[in-house]
Amino acid sequence: MNKLSTLHDAVASIPPGSHVALPGFAIARCAMAFAHEVIRQGINHLTLSQCVGAMDADILVGAGMADRLIYGGGSLDRFGRLSAVNRGIETGTLAAEEYSSLSVTFRYLAGSLGLPFIPIRSLQGSDLLRNLKERHPDDVAAITDPFTGEEWLALKPLLPDVAVALVSAADEEGNAQIDGPRWDNLEQARASKRTIVLAHKIISTEEVRQHPDRTVIPGFLVSHVVHVPFAAHPCSLFKAYDYDADHIRLYAEAAQNPESMQAYLDTYVFGVPDHAAYLAKVGGEELKQRISADPQRGY
Amino acid sequence: MTTDYSPSELMAVAGARELKDGQIVAVGLGLPVVASFLAKQTHAPNMTILFELGVVDPEPIDSGVGLADPRVWYRAKVHSSFVDILGTVLHKGRVDVGFLGGLEVDQFGNLNTTLVGDPRGKFKHMVGSGGANDIASCANKTVIIIRHEARKLKETISFVTSPGYISGGSARADLKMRGGPERVITDKAIFGFHPETKRMQLLSIHPGNTLDDVLNTMGFKPEICGNIPYTEPPTQEQLRLIREQIDPTRMYMG
Image (cartoon, rainbow over all chains, first blue to last red):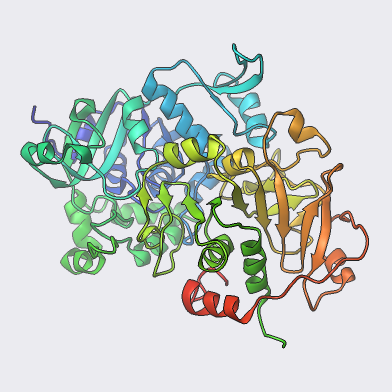
């Protein structure tokens, strides 16, 4: 089945208030083109989740699209903090449910396996757990191992309405290949009701069949396949393009207060109709040349 | 022979000394990267280096801005996932040593990477856990690398992101948690933990510092037993590897 779609239509399929699992890790494989389109369409009151907070979550929070974030902490690596997320936490406008990387991963894993809960060794004895017990008592519980009688901490599965996957290549059915490490993206897709795939390259189903071991997200999980080259800009996609350090710096600076954040959004999100126009604005062909990855090194 | 070296270089070398050949080591970016690559290129060639997002044994030729930088994934033996690395290796109990850093550490080795200020009042939110809490909870031991300043080595910290010995004594064991911090390496000294109280215990002082230098720049008095030796300085070969091969652009050493 051909699920090729425009980014506009794929994003428009998400109702306000949905729980969206985002694919980014700090400044790698962030769904920036997706986030921009969500902001343009004004799809708000979202719950966002990801194991390590990344630039895709930060811009959505900064644009006022998210009420809630379930994550394991995060940053823009050396480029700075997640300023919009942190401001939301500090001022109380964002309900952040804060875990560790593995505890969010385990919640997706439980969701992906259809398990009612998952025991974990992490979080014990920390203020992360103290906060979760106080503020989100429905998501953590003490259980007894039925075999040994030992006490364990159990987490509730995460079941997002939609996962967004930013992938190296996919066919029109959504069978997707990801070059490089995949952090939580495979469990996100399997835990979610459906997945929207943003592919740097569209390949034939024949090519998928020739390398079935490369398929990490099967097409039957996927509702929309969107061909979006450079969809992670200014973040990187391994073996396709490097991060754009200058533009990440520009964002990190802008995100530090609401006024400059709004000015950034006015220029780079509301000021362009779509991702192609955004790419033209941030450097066009010269940019694509500059950040294109050496296939040997991957960056 | 005396050799010029920076406090960061001594910290990296001290970190490398904590690693043994054949071990599996979970690493975050910064000094731990230098420490683990140094160990691997000297006394621990069969050590395995893990990055939480799904990277095993990379051989970077360029410095990276963080774990999300593909520069530090170069020539890895495995590219996989959190479930693979943090789950089937760390949570399973196969990680021998995890490196941790932080904004603040207390006398029991509890670490804060979440916020500065009053968590119930005005505070500034920082990075949070990432894999740090998982490493602190699940590794068979951890090594903490942190700057030696009174605002970082504190009697009590604003937020426990990653537990050490919690309230000390048997508190960690009572929660059936494995591991715990074994060393705290600062730019002035190296600490272990007292076997009973689980409070930080001074083990050695870096050359060029006095006991007063160490004690006057920390927020609590550590356990001190007997005469405290000086930390062994880096060798010429260790310094050469750090400066010429591991961190030539001084990205990690500052």
